[in-house]
Length: 177
Image (cartoon, rainbow, N blue to C red; front, side, top):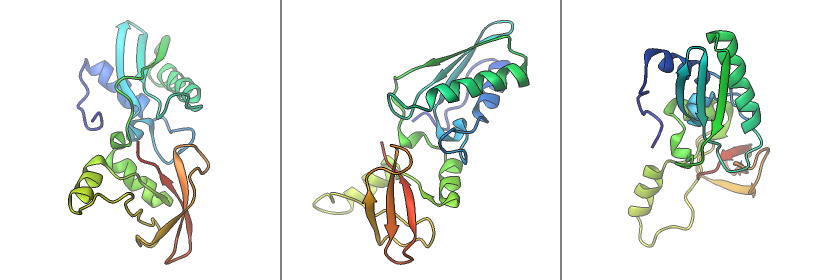
């Protein structure tokens, strides 16, 4: 899992990674790219020149270009970098496990059910025989697990639209990958 991995590199690279990580996600502006876990690495290649590695949430994600442009702008303006190259890397693939604990908290606070972690799914599956086909999604408004799927896709391909049977509120669920 990438989230929580301590930055490795020079103090300048760590500061540039911190700055790039503050960029809001264009589709979910409640999260930063750092909290989303898509920012993989920052390498200074020469004075004023930096390369940033970014992994999209899925191949073909339309937000990658906007993310790259925002990272370039922040590193030009805030760090004085003269040349910023943002490179898309597909391996290792991004997973919803890469979303930080703070990112999950912010999703819930924003009214989006965060994805379950692999650890949560494995624990729930191990507790039952046979393995359930689906696990309950908790309503971010009232906390009920009595929810229903309305649509497999919501405002973005990475979210599903659900409704809580208890409080009747619709909500997005960030799908697990």
